[in-house]
Amino acid sequence: MTIAVVAIAIRKPIALCFFLITVPIAVTIRKIFTDKVKKSAKSYRYAMETMSSSMNDMLNMIPITRAHGLEEYEVKEIEAKISTVFRRGKHFDTLTAIFGSSSWASMSILHIVFISGSAYAAIKGHISIGDVVLFNSMFLSLTGQMLMMIGTLPQLSQAGESIESVYEILTSPDLEENSGKKHFDKIKGKFDFVNVSYQYPETTRHALKDFSLAVEPGQSVAFVGPSGSGKSTVLSLVLGFIRPNSGNILIDGKDIKEMDLRTYRKFVGVVTQESIFFSGSLYENVAYGDKSVSPEEVVESLKAADAWDFVEELPEGIYTNIGADGLKLSGGQMQRLAIARAIIRDPKVIILDEATSSLDVESEERVRLALDKLIKNRTTFVVAHRVTTTRNVDKIVILQNGRIIEQGSPAELLTGDNFYSNAVWQSKK
Ligand SMILES: Nc1ncnc2c1ncn2[C@@H]1O[C@H](COP(=O)(O)OP(=O)(O)OP(=O)(O)O)[C@@H](O)[C@H]1O
Ligand SMILES: [Mg+2]
View 1: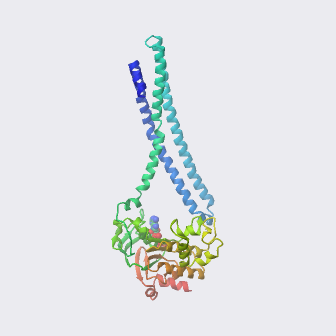
View 2: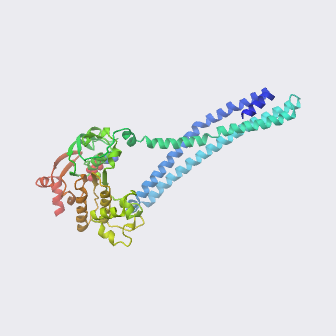
View 3: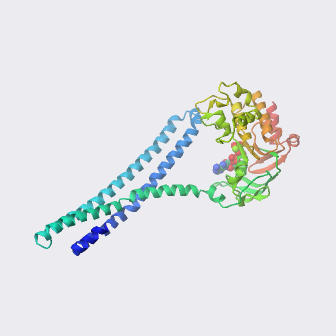
């Protein structure tokens, strides 16, 4: 491009002036389109992200969707999201095409004017025919370069959006609140909640209010109370998924505000309401992506979780395929596998959000025995829906409307008239 400019400047300085006109025109065209193209790229990206996260949710919800016969509704919802992606993608492409063609058209018009001008100058004898040919090829090369430079706008806008997307993940609240803070190298499992209150955003009522509780390492605490009383909220606080609005939570005497909670979660094992298994072998599911776990260790943990006898019977043993398209397991078997998965990580803290679904008496007893083994010598927070699970815990905390209304050992609470003793009576009927 430099050579072209210098060549034109030497041959005919006036022709250079004409070339310079292309610069402001190119800049103006680019300016007109920049905001529009960027906005379109952004809304396209949002539509893509919304669609993929809904897709993910939909896949997780398939059993529930089926159970409620909502397949058609879900398909419509997803279809609507896909058509949004399609619409916005089309808008982005159309805009890019209009931008490309208007830049090309304006450069071509300039080219025609320039050629006509130099042809006229040649006829009048100001320049030679050779000059016309030279200027023409130089001008083509210059406008070509110019078009290439302004033509990068759509790619740059899309690249900018990809960077923005990564940036949004990196600055999400969880990472932001944790980065640069002190790490946990090991933990004992002592917890102190001091006047903790928590209110979910955009709600008018506290989910937890003035919650104070001390839990010693290795102790197990069960939270009971009516629906909406704040049990799951306590578990979310223990996991550090939400942070108190006021009050403090200390782990081994250290305020969680000053700690990187991602380093703490390595010491936490979670056994949730729905034991989720991915497609793959039983071995992979129990080892949960940890390649260093040997088959022997998996067998050990299955034994500890009282799951070995049924796994041993399977033709392919621990290599049997489970998950969506694999072996169908009973509720009790799944829970024992989930317990094995927790045992293998040897966590210091256990969070147990027990499934509400009922098991038959025998599997309930076996799950309870496996759980007893799992929570032994580990600080445990349980939301129990079955009274059998709470029989062996050290402490029961009764919640109501986000407040602790009573606490004590199972034996102590059984002698009084409260939510727990009533639940136990109910279960015996
Ligand atoms: N994500 C949320 N956003 C807004 N409010 C919430 C959210 N999660 C819970 N709440 C509210 O906080 C309160 C406590 O809810 P929490 O889930 O802790 O109850 P719970 O005792 O676990 O109930 P359940 O036995 O039904 O599981 C309830 O009033 C609930 O409506
Ligand atoms: Mg709950």
